[in-house]
Amino acid sequence: MSPRFHDLTVAAIEAETADARVLHLAVPAALRAAYRFQPGQYLTLEAVIEGAPVRRSYSICSTPADPWLAVAVKRIPGGAFSGFVHETLRAGDTLSVMTPDGRFVLPPAEGPRLVAAFVAGSGITPVLSILRTLLEEEPESRFVLFYGNRSTDGIMFRGVLEDLKDRHLARLSVFHVLSREQQDVPILNGRLDAEKLRRLLGAMLPAGAIDQALVCGPQPMIEGLPAVLAEAGVSPARIHVERFTPAADARPRAVAAPATAPAESTATVIYEGVRTEIPLAAGETIIDAALRAGRALPWSCKGGMCCTCRAKLLEGRVEMLANYSLEPWETEAGFVLTCQSRPLTPHVVVDYDQV
Image (cartoon, rainbow, N blue to C red):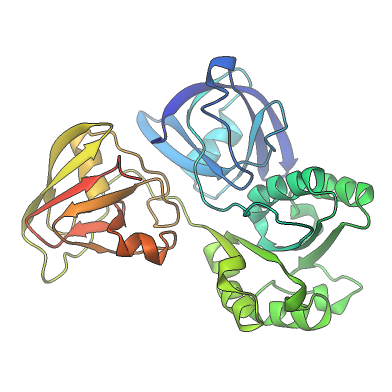
């Protein structure tokens, strides 16, 4: 089913750190089925800010067993949506919220397992949901978390993690890696980068013990970590990665057209059974053209990180500028990320309804 937006009430707003707020969203009974989610998935929020709609994606940090949906919003300097949340949004307000989406989830357990997570900054948000759910639903499984931050004051959900560790001493290990605050254990000082991960795997957690690995955080902070895990012997199929990217505005981006692109093209878009013809300028992506034309289509990050804008290319050819989320079998089957797809032929047809 294609993701849809609904208005949800902000039940509460809590300060998590000096620059992070947790939004608790109330889901009415009639929409509970639509907002069921798997731990690790995200929500896309939309609000009208200074007269224009602004859309951002945030990982769900609550669990399916909780009575609310919760996301954490970290303030970004100059960020339109995060500034709105920190300065303007109040409990009792409503937000337009897309139904849950995302693939950063663990496969079903086939027995006791060890899950290791390597996260940086706000990357803790989906991992917290996964961690809490595993501890409750898999009594024989273990979880090891390496969590990179600058200093203790900036650790999101520090109190929650300490409480969980106290209650699950034999099953949960949490190691904070701090880049601007000295700790007693030298290996835990510095940035959680590729070289640090190599040292951690050599000294604290053998790669062969890892059944599933999670890597999550802002793209620059986790660059190289999946490759290190694979080099150490963790199967790529067991490495799950969620990259956070700086938000892209809904405004069309100025890009250079590829040399083989037509001067103008047309995209036939099929969504919820409706066919729409959308003209594209040279070098324009399908989503940018749809936004300019006022056609509502699924999209979220506009950075190639998520799969919200996934569609199947039925006719024509496109160039994808970036792809961090589609699996090889999907691209081979003709699926594309329309936020990254620029036509290379005068006419293309994409179908959002094919799964």
